[in-house]
Length: 448
Image 1 (tube, rainbow, N blue to C red):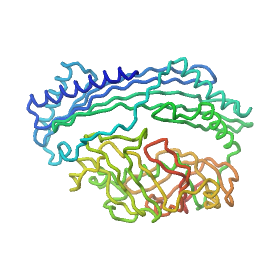
Image 2 (spheres, one colour):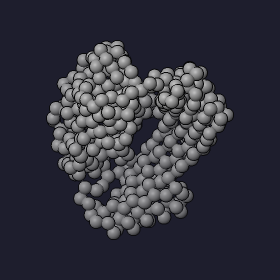
Image 3 (cartoon, rainbow, N blue to C red):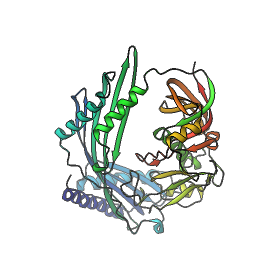
Image 4 (cartoon, rainbow, N blue to C red):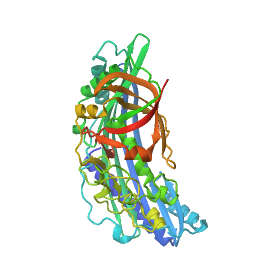
């Protein structure tokens, strides 16, 4: 989508949101908010050089929430015509008149709304034709298959590009939005030696297509990772140190964010209930939220309620400094919003000791399991119990000994967090949580 087209979409969405707010006031709502958006993209996948899928995607929608005092009603539509907008507002108003009062309902506090909205450099179009996307996917897959003759099969390579434009407005006078792009290339390959077959993958994702890794490199890394898993063994059941590669470690901290979110706290469904001010992690570990990183995959100038996002230290010297809150959960807890309606914005997990390089990290691991893939959803957010299928590599005396599969790693997240021994310097920025490899002193490994 060209810049002029993007500007046109922004103007249209601004008009739609403005009309919804005006109509809600006309129908007697004491407060109202509207969120209008449009997204479009192209996705192409190939397998063994043959085109598997070509998909164009275009979605648009409007969500309207109205308040009559403390009564709330919500309705949505994919039709952005004026008549449809008015009808959607009318339905939201009808719903609100019949709902029970909620003393915590309402818009964000006016003083919390974003006033100066920075340009975070999130919109980078990619004029990608289906033909060019197919060419890139084939190049990616071919580079991977060429690594070794044992790479005999493929689950395919894909190329994706998407732009999302959103406008949020409310009756407090806030009306703003922006466009953001996301582009990715991925490849998944299968290695075979005799009866042994193993698969692995690699990918790159960025706001700006110029920041994507070369497609041939993505394919080669996928191939190398699949080859490295050939000859995988099971382990006997034991307790041992367990390390997570950065892409796997991200999930540990995603569970943490879920536990300290306002919703989990006021519902009392968190294994870190009322934990603000407590030592959750070792003293060397810190977490900072940095919402305004240029081109960041989770960067945003304001949250889903129009509240300004700001830099924040969430964990200092291992101590939890507060919760992750939107306006509603903040009111339920008697606190103020932290600008996190809709989630966290670029969480950086750091070590005061400095991250260890790959060799030093394995040396610190000593003898234990390096996890490179996790399976299943065995994380209980209420109790913190953790049990997931895993594969990776057994490490002995600081060196990789052999690949491992079909094991389960288990523990409880509270002691696991306290038992973090080291972080790696290999920061993975391909998501909203940026972290290096993570070493936990001991977990249960269930195998044969």
